[in-house]
Amino acid sequence: MVPLQYFALQTIGIPSDLAFRIALGTSLTCIIPTSLSGAYTHVKESKIDILKPGIMFGVFGIIGGFIGGNISTIIPTRALEILFGLLLIGIAINMFLKKDDTENEPKLKLNYLTAGIIGIVVGFFAGLLGIGGGVFIIPILTLLFGFTMVEAIGTSTIFIPFSSIGGSISYMLSGWGANILPYSIGYVNLVNFILIIIFSIPMAHYGAKIAYKINEKHLRILFAIVLVIISLKMLKILPF
Image (tube, rainbow, N blue to C red; front, side, top):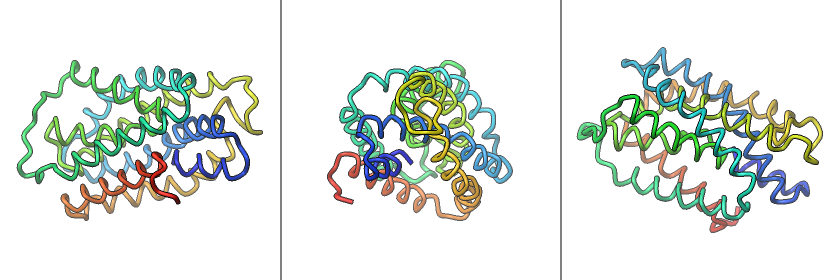
């Protein structure tokens, strides 16, 4: 949602710095109801308990999201774009090279210490980049904790609302009183918010159901391809 909003706002004449802040803040706010819709479906469909690990990571994600959201307002826009793009490329490479889920071996034990560290770190980047954190928490769960791709996606939908709340609040507060678009709370534009969630909430529900019907390997590759496309666009390598 960040790239699409960013480029759309620029096309109507919004300065790049302001467009990027609005895209970040509004996207994080949209992610909250969208992820809750997907989380509900995943909890019903999943054969394992994804609620507990999702909440464990998520509680700490609120802290990281709030910190990251505040820091993003003082970092140059282009630096954020480059950081975003490079991180996504690195994650995509890991997803492409990852072995099949049947060969997964947990490298870390899930406890409050590991959940706290990873929750805060992922939440920080989620707030910093306005992306909720799914692109980071999913590969971490699969590569370090031995989750299958579907389990990781389901757990991420529970984590994401937490980290997004922290980030969303920070963007509302940091943009308070600034010369933003009409119908905005800080850097969160309510018009864009409503237009996006009208489509994103039902799509998240159906997307969650489809995830359980797709082959694990194919799902992982599809996820990696999406990351590459987004990263190349943010790095301005792709023209569209």
